[in-house]
Length: 153
Image (tube, rainbow, N blue to C red; front, side, top):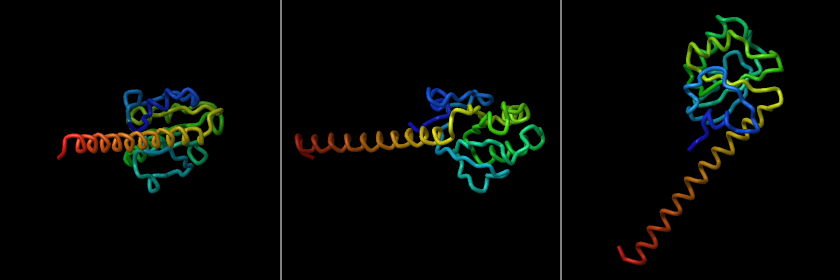
């Protein structure tokens, strides 16, 4: 099974905190991507956990955050990870309200958790899922081969 937002929140080394979208934590995460673009949508495929520090965003402006979150939801982003302690000491209420209104899972990323750690966790979970699928395929092939050799076609 691919990683989900819930599996990332439960990852003991990441210390992520859910700020919105608690009911959507089963959402699969296809990738984790950091972007500080005011509009990263043209560069998204859907299913990403977008990681931001809000360098180019006025995250305290309700109208700007509503528009930003709507663009992300429209692009199929799985969730938004917001780093605190970089440009903002806490997740701005305007962003939390917009995420709640639009149903976008919002995760608070503590200063001590580098985005790279989140990306590695997602990548490792995806690799483990792919390995499991390949292993199951080989096991099924072995069983079919054994049955064919033992009983004939």
